[in-house]
Each structure stands twice: as C-alpha cells, then as structure tokens.
Length: 104
Image (cartoon, rainbow, N blue to C red):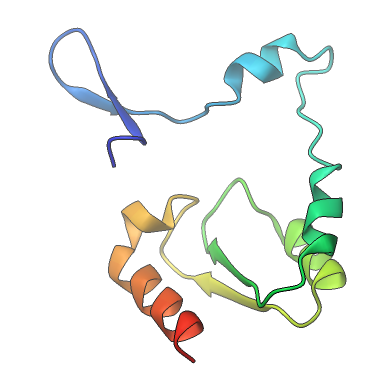
C-alpha cells in the first residue's frame, strides 16, 4: 500500500492516483499510447491470468476483448466490487485467485 499512497504536508496520507499524469501532460493530445504493449501480450507463452476490477476505470471491455484475442487460452476473471487497485479493494479475493491459478 505504501506504493499506492503518499504523505501530504499535514501528516495525513493520500492515494497516488496516476503515475502517468506527467506523461499525459507531455503528450500533445493528452493520451498515452500503450499499443506497443499489445505485442508483448501476444508474445507471452506461459499460462496467464488477467484479473480486472469490476469497477475499474482503467481496464475496459475493449481491453479485455483485445487481451482475449491475443491470449485466447488465458484466464480472465472480474472481481466485482473492486476498482483498478484490486490488491487494495479486495486483497483476500485476489490472493485466492492467484493461489488457485498458480497451484491449479
């Protein structure tokens, strides 16, 4: 959780929402192009598990569609009630999914 939060001047902590904010500001259209990463997804030859938070605003249905196209044999699981930070929102559910995948 320390990687997902940062201290503020008054001693409280706040979430680090977007590490790509600087990159977006530098891009002419404000968007970050991740298209080259899809080639890396296609190149994976080991068993793969994609876990998506049901309320994630980062990974959309179109991303899952592309993922399944590039990794048709992979497992895709949606954790309802979790946002993009599944490890923070539903840590026990995530741990159970990973354990089941690794030791299946």
